[in-house]
Image (cartoon, rainbow, N blue to C red; front, side, top):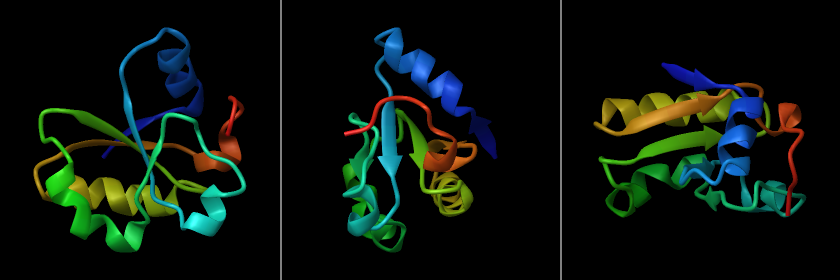
Length: 98
């Protein structure tokens, strides 16, 4: 499984790189703050949203601590998607949130 640090994600955002972040936390969790460009798809519903994702793009998966996003990353990889897990999740994120 590929991983990326929160610092590397923040650098990509700061450099204006086009990245695709999926936050797999529940709505009540993302309501407390999320990375502004992140799309919210709770882990339990990810399989219902596969048709919305492009297999040609890379997705950076995020959750609270990195555990659920690791599950999401594995699931997407098993289904032919290019996914990377953000280590430490939002607990390790030091960038801006909305």
